[in-house]
Amino acid sequence: MQPSLPMHSRTLTDRPRRTLRDDEALASPPLLRSGGESAPLGARTWQGLFGAQGPNTTELAALSSVARLRTVAAGGSVFDHGHPATALVLAASGDVALGWRGSDGVFHIERPVRGPAWLDQSAAWLEQPHAMDARATGDVLIAELPCAAVRALLERHPGLARHLLASLAREVHGLTMNTHELMHKDAPARFAAWLLLRLPASSAGSAGSTASGGSAAPLLRLGERKRDIASQLAITPETLSRLMRSLSRQGLISVAGYSVQVLDVAGLQRLAESG
Amino acid sequence: MQPSLPMHSRTLTDRPRRTLRDDEALASPPLLRSGGESAPLGARTWQGLFGAQGPNTTELAALSSVARLRTVAAGGSVFDHGHPATALVLAASGDVALGWRGSDGVFHIERPVRGPAWLDQSAAWLEQPHAMDARATGDVLIAELPCAAVRALLERHPGLARHLLASLAREVHGLTMNTHELMHKDAPARFAAWLLLRLPASSAGSAGSTASGGSAAPLLRLGERKRDIASQLAITPETLSRLMRSLSRQGLISVAGYSVQVLDVAGLQRLAESG
DNA sequence: CGCGTGGTTGACACGGATCAATCGTGGTGG
DNA sequence: CCACCACGATTGATCCGTGTCAACCACGCG
Image 1 (cartoon, rainbow over the protein chains, first blue to last red):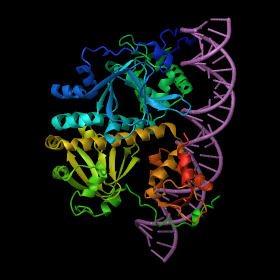
Image 2 (cartoon, helix red, strand yellow):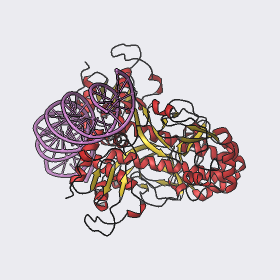
Image 3 (cartoon, each protein chain N blue to C red):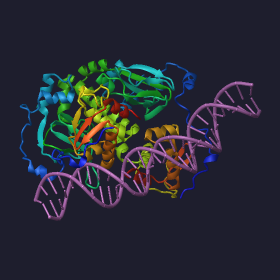
């Protein structure tokens, strides 16, 4: 049994900042700069979108030539649910939350996205409105590839199609897995899976070593408000809180504020598969 | 209030046949015929896959030329979870269930599919194994488009890419909606939505006319075992049974065995949106 | 210093799952 | 032909997981 660290003495100085408030959006300078990259859309960005086997240099240059860039300050809206989509939208860098604005005005995050990543690569092909809302949770560099332009590009660069298809297929795969989790796994299993996904890839297969000094128990810092994490897991903040407490008592993890130490990777994996 | 028909005097002669049992698979003749269509893959099939704005005749002919056809008898396996995918798989005609075989051997249907429709158009692009199992629930004509061949086709017919992209995008859209329903709607709402989806398109917007003799209340026959319907809705058969009884008592529907009469379309729509 | 925000905790309600029993149907073998 | 049995649906009783509501605490900010 692992003693839970004293919650009341923790420092919350490292707490994730509130993310979707207008005052912060206004406070940050609305500069139009190209993020941390020298080129507007660099190789690293494309690799994040297409994986290691992405398009070649010529194709990437073509894509870049039709991209329209804009920045969105933290808290701003990237696109809105129901608004017609005419372009493939991606985040070159920065954090964006995909979700739905409820009737009460509260924003329900369904999927957090860290650039470089696609935000909506499907609606435009269907000439349909965006299916979700996208809100910047940090300053973000957005790129839009107008659908008509990309179609024209496909005529001249047939090889591009394969990569766009693969990238859409990746999204289908992810959504299918997510649906399956929602249908068949309970909250503890989903949370365990969520934790494992955020683990550095190094500490994947090792068995739980609760007290062995050899391999260090991986430490991970939660980058979002806990209520946003709960939202992604489709549970309430209260349930998430109880869940973390429960896993602590079982010695699977050790929680101190926004730092979570995974003490028993194998145990978490077992938990994540119960369903 | 609508009197519920006497359940015990109903005839179950029209009950859907058990679907996934080996004896039936063996009982039906394993003929290799080309289904009900004269051409192996006819225009109607392609339209079901790509919608009204599908590829042109030349492109369709090219696709047909690389398609490999096979039939699967009722109860047979079309492809298995984990098996490597080298082709885009579609059902030209017939009924297939997409789902997962549980560790107990029970097959959990997650999505029923009526040909013509795609069965897996994503795994092959990623060179990954199929994410789900596909089992024929009736005699089915399967077509496989080898991924390598389709890639070659894209070089010569760039216009094809647009339609393959749109078709994948449609799947993304459907999965996104489905995920949202699972996260935010309760069982009655999901069942109501399920019923509305199966309604003939004619009786969409009409308000509920419980007793008006004018517009006939749409009647629909359940084509699957109720436990399979429950499986799609991610609820248990018991819950589905109680749900149908409950909606009957409220006068929204009238149930007699495997026939469901929708008495109050508007009421169902209201129910489907609660969440 | 008061207030707003976010997190934690407890009491409670409720939806849906689980377990068990019964019924109707259809298939099978004596 | 009939008894038997397997299977699916239904119903009732009960349990469990989460959501809801409310109170409280901790922190940071104006």
